[in-house]
Length: 292
Image 1: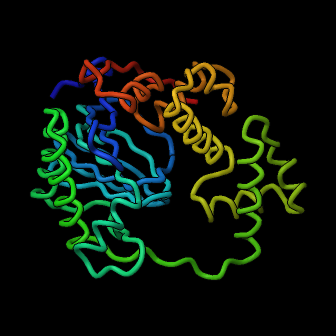
Image 2: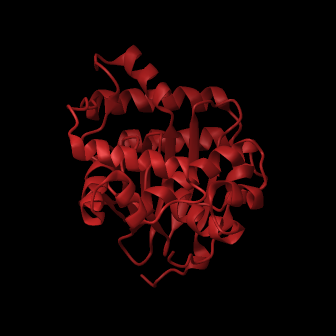
């Protein structure tokens, strides 16, 4: 097959009217590369064409048609094409409370549900995820909500268990947590790694090891991810992207746009339109995103 171009990429990220607690992404990516990032929601992605490759924490995975990619909340992961033609998928990003609600009604899982395997072969549920998208696009929230909950129930029964509870945390974990708190508090004017380590009374490389072990990425990557999360919240409130960029610590709107697209999958403007109402156009055309 001939190599596809980035001009053939398309993506639609939105929250359908009448469907609460979940965002949808329908996309085809070719040269797209997702930076290491996390979500405060689950990720349930049905791959329909091509092959996606991703790293979840330190392990590499691939997923092709009929496979579902299942990522638990706050789990660092990446994403890129594994074949020249890229990949196409339909994604649901359900809130934790929504998945817990379905789990309480349909399973005996004790605690917050989690998916131990990031890739599962489940064609029937993958087709159901696609049907959620079709119903939402058709403006049928009753069908979309019904199919969505049926899909979640099937996934939870077949592939889920309780998320492991945190064990007693040592001094290294507490240092990493303190570093994270400082970065969150000073998001717009963060300290250097040396300044951060000195403030916490540790060495720079010791801090790097502890932070990566706890959060799956170094402090600068975590900060970018946190800024994008904060940007999403401000965009949801209706703040213009240029003001959002300054409010979360990016140098300008272009800087925000580059990182936002590498984590969310669409630019800030497309995200804001999709969250506020159903866009009139189903896709936008992407451009290659330069490395940060």
